[in-house]
Length: 204
Image (cartoon, rainbow, N blue to C red; front, side, top):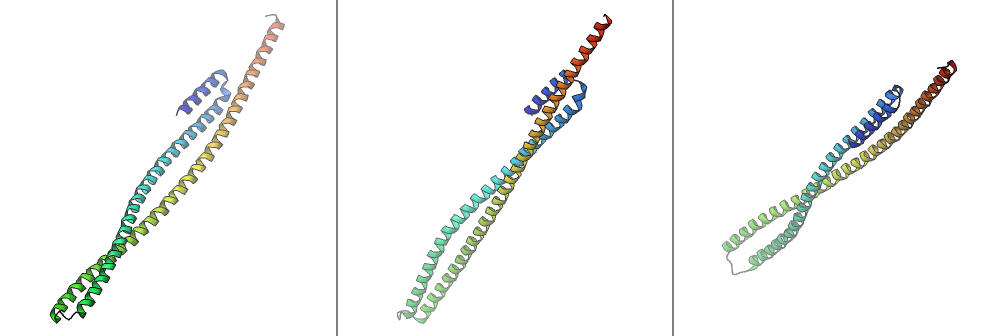
């Protein structure tokens, strides 16, 4: 807004020095400058929106990184569970081969081991599904982040290009106003000189 106030003050000073013929042109420049300020405000609003979206994606990305890290820890735990399951299988085989246990004892041990093994299988499958889901979310979040970043960069370049065009147009209008002001001053000076000469000839 400070640029616009300065620019309007400059226009007012030039209106005082010049004649009314440049008023329409000055108002056009003022409108052009107002459009420039509006464009700047729009760019600021878009920058705030883009920054908010980027912050949200960063937070989601951080959260997914934590999930992936936890999932990796879970994968280590899965390996531990699988090793424990293999140990249980070996223990089960040993129990079957041991003649010290009766058939009833073997049946109870076998049922107990099967139940524990089924529980371990279910836990392993759940952890594997959670790991796959975390990877999918991390990939999707990264894609959204990259898309928004590219769009933000493209829009910023377009705004900068339009602002440069406006600056060039404003500079051109400034030169036209300056030329008009000098022309009006010269015309006024010539008119005054002509009147003085006519008065002199008539003896005033």
